[in-house]
Image (tube, rainbow, N blue to C red; front, side):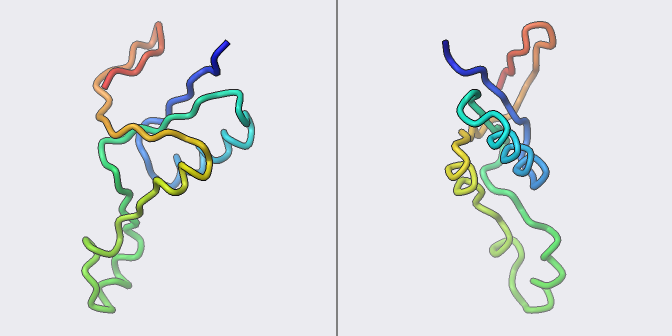
Amino acid sequence: MSNPPIVILGYNFARLTTGRYLHVAVKDKAEITITDRKSLLTFVSNIPMQMLTNVNPAIDLPLKFMSFLEHDGSEFLQAEVITIDPDKNPVFS
């Protein structure tokens, strides 16, 4: 029997934390996939500091979150969710 899938839609710090807590809770009993249309997470709270130090935030702030997912054993799917079937639970991208 295969492990049930858990899909986390979108990616931000809250969802990163959710994925990490899920891994602790379910261990190897579920396949966790995170999907987002972007492959980078922008850490916007540093923008004022970047501007004060004359660093372009567009270059310096994207967070490559793949290393976090690899550490936790999650998969990442870069896609845009089009619809979710609430009766059968599939996610269509």
